[in-house]
Image 1 (tube, rainbow over the protein chains, first blue to last red):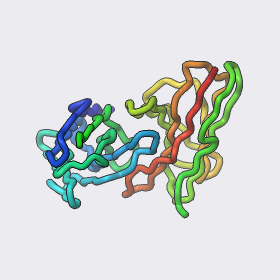
Image 2: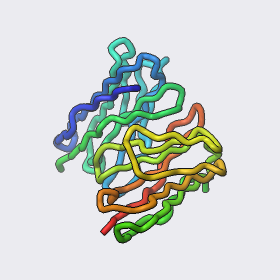
Image 3: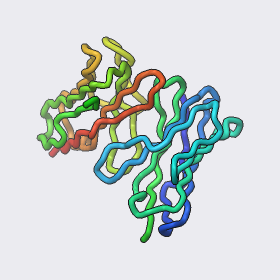
Image 4: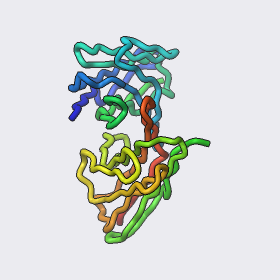
Length: 111
Length: 111
């Protein structure tokens, strides 16, 4: 099966700084890579995703980059705000069957 | 509104009791999943279903069982609850070409 590793497990940044979270995966056939944000006591919610035929995708302050050759993808958050504080999960799937999740990154944005 | 509905949201039960966690989705999705998650921690896949009458065990061993008699309904049953079953249970669903969506979760405490 797929093996997804996510780093770092915790990340603390000052408000306004950038944050980067990286995930690596093992199955080269994987073709869809979403990122989820989970606030305390709430369900994980999709914030951005990327498909294997695209190298980068941006949505306002967040972006995802994908390196298929190296089998890793990263979440980039610029101009961080306190409301960005949450746990972030990456996920990997081949053809939208089983989704394999990373172990999560707890992001703390200090005001 | 199209969503994934879980009941009960919060439950405290005694050891040895039988409990069924309900999950229904009105999104027309064919694939459904159950994840177990301690607060802010990894998402562990315990059961999944690709369609009616199709169920599989996930990557984390679980003493629970599931059924899929109707497309929109995917209940999870614990025959004899133990304190080690105390956790949050997240139901999720997806359709080919779509990302995975989560319900709000059922918080189970076994005393």
